[in-house]
Length: 120
Ligand SMILES: [Zn+2]
Image 1 (cartoon, rainbow, N blue to C red):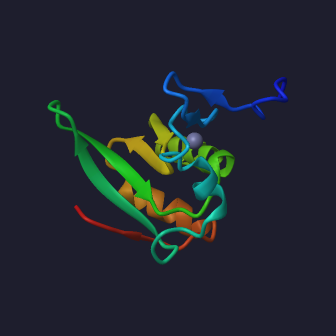
Image 2 (image 1 turned 90 degrees about the vertical axis):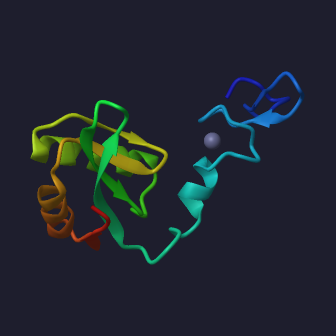
Image 3 (image 1 turned 180 degrees about the horizontal axis):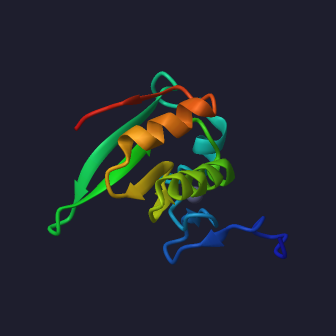
C-alpha cells in the first residue's frame, strides 16, 4: 500500500469508499465477508448444472465452498484440469464449461470436501 491517508482504499466520485479488490462500494463488498464469515448454509458444496444465456450452453456450477479467493481459484483450476474443460471462478462460485457434475463431485469428495448434487 502506498497511500497512508486512504489506507489503500480508493474513493468513488460520490465519496463512498470502494473496495480495492472488487471495486464495489464497501457496503456491497463481499470480499472480506467471504474470507471471514462462515459459509452461508451448511458448509456442503452444491454442484449443479446450469444453462447460461441464449446459446443454451451448459456449465457445471459449484457453490457453497468455504474457501477464500486463492483457495477457490486453485480448486477451480484443479477441477478444470480434471474435467479437461475451461471455466471461471467468480464471486465464490466455480464454473466449469460443460456438464461435469459427476466428475466434479468425485474430485471434491476425494479431496475431502463435503459436496452434493443440487438442482438439475
Ligand atoms: Zn470487495
